[in-house]
Length: 223
Image (cartoon, rainbow, N blue to C red; front, side, top):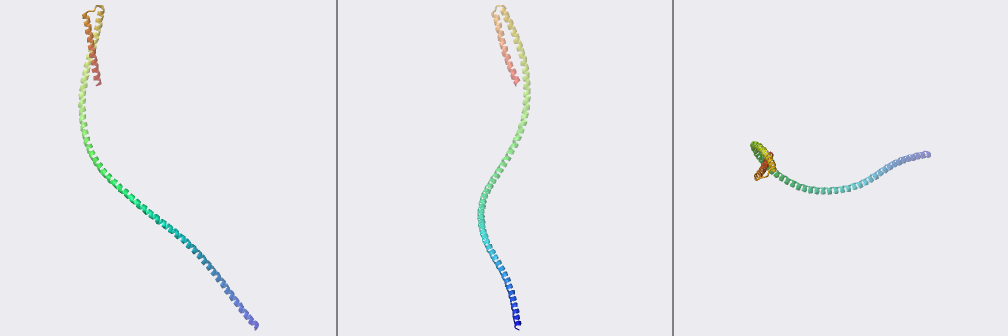
């Protein structure tokens, strides 16, 4: 009975031991689970702290960029306002120039129309003058043709007169030579001297008339 009792106690202890092993294993598993959870919590906390730090940096960067954006926006607004004022002034100046050019254009068009009317009047006057000039030209040409024919007739007559005078001059020169030869053979007397002098005067006169006719002939040819 003692052995049976001890055996029973031993079995009981074995069962307790087994139960304790099961409990210990369970506790180990729980401990591992808790350790894993704690580690994950620590990692999450570390990540959260890092995230918060990053967020803070990002917030600071965002604030800096926001301040920079508003600063640039303000500068841009001021620049745009300045450009608006500048372009408004330029637009007013251009509008004034356009109004001036329109007035100048209207004045120019009026002047052009007036000049066109004057040009038409001048063309009509020029055509009238051209017609009259053609008539005058025809009249003058007819008159000049008649005068040229008269001059040609006069020239022919003067040429004939010149030929006659040249013939007379040659005859007188021959007569003078004959008279000189006779004077050389005979003694000179007053009658012969007078005759020679008369012939000389006649020759000089004929030469002068010949020169006058030459001049007239030249002027007639030049005309």
